Image (cartoon, rainbow, N blue to C red; front, top):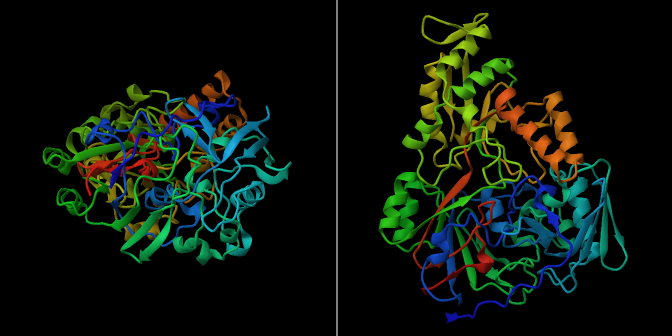
Length: 549
C-alpha cells in the first residue's frame, strides 16, 4: 500500500446551481462529504489517503435483487452507491445540487421541463459510452418502467412523460404535471445509470449484480451467493461529482461485502479484525467498541423520513383522527431514548429529520401527555373494558405493528411503546423485527402500523399519497391536494409553507405518522479505517482508505 497525495481541488463551481428546496431532503445518497459525517471517521489515523488494500464491509442480509429501481433498501443502495453514477449530486456543505454525469442542468419555471447537458468522455464498465442517448434510455426506463421485463417506474418520477435527445449532448425531459422534486430525484441511487445493454436484459438479468454495467468507481468482480460480493476498483474512473475530494479512481483496490445477520457478533467482528466496517451496531456495543480503540460512526439518514409507526387505517380502528392523535401523545419518547437508544440517536421533532430543508419543529406537540390521550380516546367512544383494554361496539382496541429487522432498536422500542399504550387502554401486538410476519402483513391493510423509514427524494407524497401503497395503506384527499401543490411550487416562502402544512398534518392534525427518532445507521469501524457516509447513510467507498495492510 502506498500513500497518495491529497487530490487536487475540485473544479471551480459552475454558475448553474439548484438550491436545496428544489428537493425535499437536505442531502443526497451520493454525498461524499457531509456535515453529518462523524468526526471520528475523519480523525482516525494520521496522514493522507493511502492507495491499495481491501476493505471488508459487513452488511445485514444478503440481496437477491439488484435492479436499480429496487434499490430502496440499505443492503442494496449501500453497495450500488459505488457501482452506479447519477446525473446529479447533492453537495451537503453548499446545500445544492451540483454536476455529476450531467455537467449542467436546468428546469423551466413550471417544473415540467428539465434539460441535462451530458458530460463527455464517460463510459460504462462494458465500454459503451454514457452519452445523451444512453441517458434518454435510462430516463425512460426510470420514468415509464420496462414492461417487457416487468419493471415498474421509479416512484419518485411523478408525472414523467418522455425524454428526447436535443443536440449532440443534451437530453430534455417532459413531465405531464409539475414536479419540483424531479431534479432532486435524479441524485438517488434508485436513479442510477446503467448501460443500454443492461436495460435490454430481462428482469432476472437486471437483478443480477454480475450482469449490471454501471459507470461507477467500482465494478463487480465475483460473488458467493448469500455469502459475499466482491467489487474491484475501476482504474480509469475520472468523473466523480464535481465537489468530491477524490476526483480520480478509488484508493482501495477492492471492497468485499459480507453478510453478518447476527447483531451480537458485529462489534466483535470489528474488534477481531475480521471486518473493517459493519452496519447495524446495537447500542449496548457502542461503548465497548470505542473503549477498544475502534470507532462508532453514526451516519445520519437525512434523506429519509424519521423512524415512525406509519398508520394504516384498513381495520377501521384508527379511522378516527382522535384515536391516532391519542396514540401519538401516548408515546413517552424520552423514555425510549433513555432506555433503548444511545447518544447516536436524536428524538424526532417531525416526520422530517432535523437537518432536512423545510423541517418544522413540532416536538412540543409530541410531548408525552397520557391524560390528554385518555380524554381523546374517551371522546372517540372507546371505553375502558374490565381487562383495561378499551372497546367500542364490541371491538377491542387492539392494534398490530409490523416491521423488518433492519433496525437493531425497532423491536425493543415498540416493547416500551406496548407498555405505554397499555396505560391508556390500548393493546399493541408487537411484531416488529419479525420478517416472516412482515411478508404477509405488508399487503394486509388490517395490520395497523408499519414501523419504517423511507427515502423521500420525490417528497413525502409517494409515501403517503397512493391509495394502493402497501407501506401505509393510507390516502387522504386533503393531504393529496397539499402534496400536489408542493410539487408544483417553486422554491421560496410558498413552498416552505406547503412543506410545513404537510408535516403538521402528518404528525399533529391527522397523525398518520407516529414519529419516533431521526433515522441513523450506526456503523462500527476498525481504527485503521477511514470512511465517510452519504446522508442516505451509505459508505462512500470511492473516497475510503485504510492505514493498515
